[in-house]
Length: 166
Image (cartoon, rainbow, N blue to C red; front, top):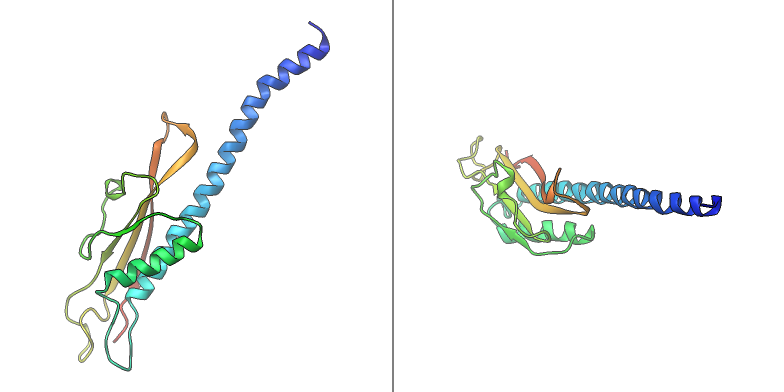
């Protein structure tokens, strides 16, 4: 074999490894971007739910799941993550990754919304307590490695805010 043929063979073998390294780097960049978007969406959803209107002495969005989902959807759309956003309940906090949606481009929003009486007199229900919004989705790798991660794995964005009004 000539030296030119040897170099071509080495390039062909190493290019496969190089392509997998580049695709892996792309996967980690997408993972970081999507995780950041989920955290931001959960934070904005929780902030929106905890809003207090001093003029009316109410928490207008605390039990408004459509409004919370709309805020989460706006943040995720702005980050380039499109897909159906579904409210999963106002008294459920997901305890494990099994709470994530089964399909890759679907987002579940869970809310642990306080309903107890306010911790200070004259304030609306839930004031002074924590609201927890969790945003879950599945991340799909470009480089499929069923040995380590499976075809897609769950990601969670979670945020706690104290409900205003006290």
